[in-house]
Image (tube, helix red, strand yellow):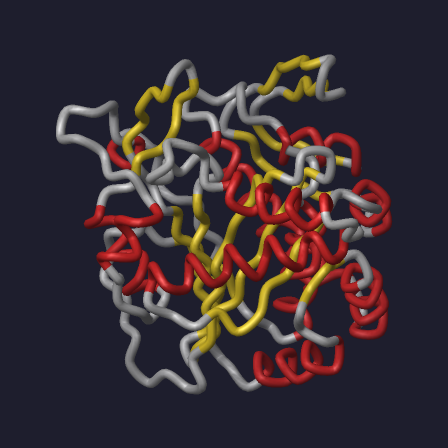
Length: 322
């Protein structure tokens, strides 16, 4: 939905400051996890403040080779027959019922999701961060907009969500409002969230390139400070600065991988049933080892006849090379 781009701005600013490149990987490819230094994983969440649903969930691994980002579908099917993003929402709502403010609620939701995903993938999640929409359009407009190439024309109107988007295929220059529409739009794609995640990767790649080549270090630090102020995180700002210095010592790249599943119907809702083999690949990608018991407690695996696998029908991954 709408609260996605501040994460992309923050991540792009970090990467731009320290010259880290971007690539995109298919999850099935082998990943070299050798020569790891102080290997750590972080959880990044984009949340709908109205419902507290986590519509963006990413695990980011920092290691000697650079950064590896795992995109997790919000509609991943849990063992309770619900979307994965409701795990975060339920924790937030429990906190709100006790009188917690949004920051405290996001902290509880992030802590719970980090613990559960870390147990599944066999990694320790060092910190988590949660982002909402606030100041998104302003920040995009502040950098002068972004250029993207759209794989298809997008035309969609949803008055309930306040979303209207009408963009032709091909090269586009997007201001804040148009970029917001792009990262929120999912129903215009045949593969829904997977199409939206591809669009999000294009946006971050374009933003990264612009920040790296058109902004001074001083301007980037100012933008990063503004973006950090919009984040609920258990990582203190001084620790974030230490993290930035560590990133500066890496000559590696930023790689994206998307965890994919089989589309199954639960009632009328299409959800993504994640196969154990893909969860195993994801754990390896993050430098961990799948905890099979924890995975079965958290996720409901697909049957052999369930739905189509988007992994088999998606277009080639989007790649940016410097």
